[in-house]
Length: 280
Image 1 (tube, rainbow, N blue to C red):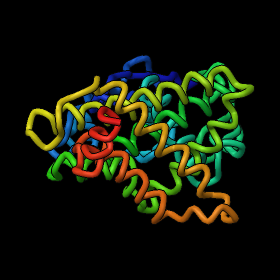
Image 2: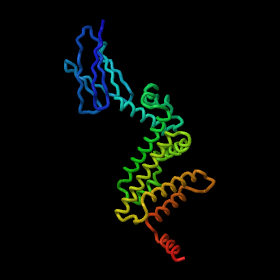
Image 3: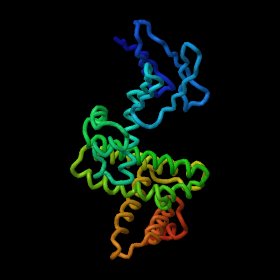
Image 4: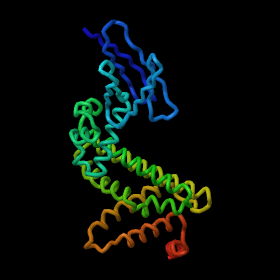
């Protein structure tokens, strides 16, 4: 009769490792774990000081047969299992759309069972909403990093007009799909509102920075200006999809730039309009 000995420990902040040894007595072989200078390698040291290298990969669990008597089973911690599933859902949503972001499809992409997805997410709708929000947050962080060295005027253009790389295009496609789902999905409505709020916060911050640097004029509350500019940008983006209107990307960009100029830079043309309005 063989008995089973199990050792458990948390390794590298994201892995649980179970060392399962089949032995012929009740004495267990212990494999104390330590962290290698290379963060991607978990090392086990047996009683004879022989190093056994375990290289974890993306999946929820890996099983290693070191000998007929020793098996190593590596699990992601609970929090990291959920994060791995969410990252997989975000990739599916970005590549295939929200409609394709089903529990079965995400489980397959994450290399886990559908039951694990249900364990971490209350419903498919909750999974889709969180995946959408993660995509939007990643996009906003990417734009924020890429705009760090730009002037306030260039930054606000990037937030409202110019971020047209492949990542942006795919994320905006998802944004439009999510907006349609808000009519019938409360969780998506909340996620969509959160992404709009984050966008507004970024535009408002650029306005505040521009005013501090003297690039933008002082005036109306930055909150209101940010909402108007976002409303114009999103509306023109939606209308430009109807090619029969003749509203090209170039014309949309021109109109948004004019709005930025009027709201924040007070061009001579705008000052003339103000003067005519007050003297007429």
